[in-house]
Length: 187
Image (cartoon, rainbow, N blue to C red):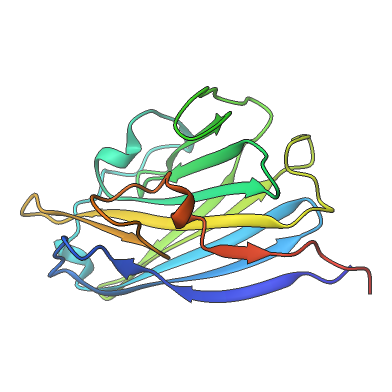
């Protein structure tokens, strides 16, 4: 089974400012019923606000501070999923029936994550398994949005995404699902 592998760079929202980071890159691999993603933030990592590490667990409102996010849906018009990952090792998974409506918290998707950091780099690797998710069929094209909220130690927040819609940051907006990944092909 062949998988798709893509490298992307997140863009800083035009109304945001971030003195701590110079770039956020992402690498994505789509396998049969899963996705592997790696975010790499580069810059002065000591200037990024990060919650102390805890055991990996589900949590709410992670987007209020530093976190990496992935949004996924299958084409043509399936519900979509939102994943939030905090440097604290806390995570959240939400399923939306449509744009910002019908939110549920699925119990059958538990992401695996690994964080590493240094003075110049903060990195997250996450594995997402959709084996049990009927609305993420492996034979359909998947649309993906990758984003990040970065809170600096001075309290300033910046918003990063593959693509931003006009206006304020809105990672749920259909324009943010900027990456198209076809189904893996047999090889």
